[in-house]
Image (cartoon, rainbow, N blue to C red; front, side):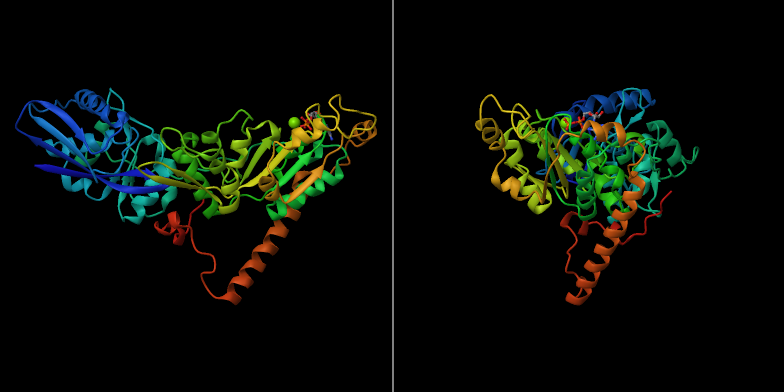
Length: 454
Ligand SMILES: Nc1ncnc2c1ncn2[C@@H]1O[C@H](COP(=O)(O)OP(=O)(O)O)[C@@H](O)[C@H]1O
Ligand SMILES: [Mg+2]
């Protein structure tokens, strides 16, 4: 007899259905997993056997074959443990197989039978909702899954035994509640910056219009300080943006405690970052820093110190708002609608243009340094400003007079509301669907769902 359990494989932030088929048949005792599984999935055999043993179920003295269909879709990650274990339990009659029919299942098993957290629970829950199924996921990820919708049936067991007891009716599991991170109590505030009125005004304009910004100035002028204060004047994420951003964070395993945050991402990778770290890639085609700053800020400090190839790899995401990772056997794309903020010194020694200073290497100190940034990348940066060193007078005398981030954020929010109203008016005049829904979202139906904020 073959039992079926539904799980998912991830292609970007899209959850693709995978059917886990488990067959127990007479033959040499053992367990085999087929269906283009990577090493983590192949190792799930040992975890499943140990977890079943720890839960009081012994492996049958028969041949167990597990097939992950469709067999030509690559399967990566450890979240196949739980569906394989449940498929096996259903084949052995330890859980009723019809009880599993309405669920998408994902979770990793520990050797003692507890269900450990996995990445990608939020996109899986949204995918399950689109398939009109419930979700069985690890307890630690339940709060994250609950964001997929108010109606979706979610079971978040701590262990295999708790789940078996739930199906037997001897222990009822309650539905997890969606959780939002409280706003941080201290964020860097614009009021800390003395002087630099022109730079602060430019930062406000960049925040209001979502413009890319480059700040050029000598070391210690306060460029990094200004950039770090940009998130404090940006409006919070809208519910739809919140889900988009959190789906990417979930795939990357960056959602701590399953809680979501409505603050815009601010990512500041070090200049030694590789191309895969910035635009995504690596062994599992993970999202890169550009995608992790979706709907937020990607801050590249000391811009010319980044490798020129890495900087040029950002040209495509800046243009198309997505990072495409092409592999021999598949192609993955992650959304990356970013606001690029960069800071740099004017030359290698950092002091070009300062009154009374002459670079030792002459004008080449400036030209060689600035030539590290290509013209096409500079073309995509709308605002470029000089940030001169702040004068001693401003530093000493400016205390207490600077405007706070809260006051600037109010003006930014008003500007953005006006822009949105104008865009809506334009869209009405041109007719419906002038702004198509991105492909990966149009396949899931959650956009039409009201999101209940906790
Ligand atoms: N305008 C300013 N107001 C207050 N402190 C400043 C200002 N500019 C620089 N500083 C001080 O100098 C330090 C270095 O600034 P930083 O932002 O790192 O400079 P940069 O990135 O331009 O080299 C800051 O941590 C801050 O203490
Ligand atoms: Mg700096």
